[in-house]
Amino acid sequence: MSKILVTGGAGYIGSHTCVELLEAGYEIVIVDNFSNSKPEALKRIKQITGKDFDFYQVDILDREALGKVFDEHGDICAVIHFAGLKAVGESVAKPVEYYHNNITGTLMLIEEMRAHGVKKIVFSSSATVYGVDNTVPYVETMPTNTATNPYGYTKVMIEQILKDVYVSDNEWSISLLRYFNPIGAHSSGLIGEDPNGIPNNLFPYIQQVAVGRREHLNVFGDDYDTPDGTGVRDYIHVVDLAKGHLCAVKYVLENKGVEAVNLGTGNGSSVLDILHAFEKACGKELPYKITDRRAGDIAWCYADASKAKKLFGWQAQYNVDDMCRDGWKFIQQNPNGL
Ligand code: NAD
Ligand code: UFG
Image (tube, rainbow, N blue to C red; front, side, top):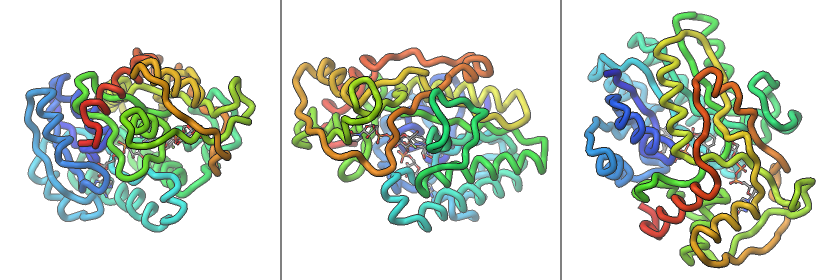
């Protein structure tokens, strides 16, 4: 069976994808520097799947170390590239660190892939590439040059780099997966999102309110032009997202070319929809306060999910109640994270 190198495989989306890859019979090799994850995640992947894999604590900026991983596994046939920094606010404060880690890191990876004749890659892009000028639902053919922060620009630029790599060498096969808002956890409750410090994102914040680690949720604005005034997003179960990667890997193994593909459900939910769905899952009321809007936020963000269905035969299976049920299970079992 095919061997896949997974960068950032100890992280939130990476760990769920590794579980799906192992369960589908792929061999995997994981590279992670634990800058935003913990070794425990790797143990949990093994616990869930009962399968083993090689792991290297390597920073993808360390080209020599990365090269050794490819040397030791001459049968790697494709890469899923999750490794990157992802906090929007932090990227505004530390643009150089973000551009260096995400873009230089990707360039090092591409160079080592090329040196070892591996020309198939699935890249973690984001709905953030649709920026501020497009209107929902977002379609892959829309222009993507109006990101609102350095993190978003790293995704715009890496997509461009990978498109140019394909133009220079048509042997490449590249999938640019534009994720919408992944939430929830594996149904075992063993892996899930485990952010350091105060969560930036809605769902882990709600999870921490539910277990009493935070007093209340701050809802960032209720005066948007949306049904209840709070921001609308396309929340997707992280296991659905992980399964989307299986389809993308199969696609790059069998085809050449470069394709941008949205991974979303096509449905929008507001901040209060998610809060109330979580209340239902955990069986208690969760306190919240309406505060000012957060800088850089938009009112609406949801996918046109038809390309993924057409190209990959993939479509999300889980709804918001499933996402909250599994997210509640994870935080109950791991109230202080992994
Ligand atoms: P995460 O932080 O949980 O996982 C990223 C992993 O990469 C971490 O384990 C981290 O330690 C590792 N890493 C970072 N820099 C590295 C480096 N230089 N060398 C080696 N390892 C490194 O984040 P996630 O939510 O799992 O996101 C995975 C990818 O998906 C990221 O590229 C992110 O930008 C992208 N993405 C995430 C979301 C989201 O909402 N979670 C949305 C769109 C896109
Ligand atoms: N929100 C709150 N309170 C919070 C956190 C968030 O009200 O404490 C609101 C936001 O204003 C927004 C919604 O909840 O309306 C979702 O916010 P998140 O921070 O969870 O997610 P974003 O849509 O802002 O951003 C996420 C990822 C980005 C990615 C983007 C598009 O964090 O990396 O989706 O894919 F680029």
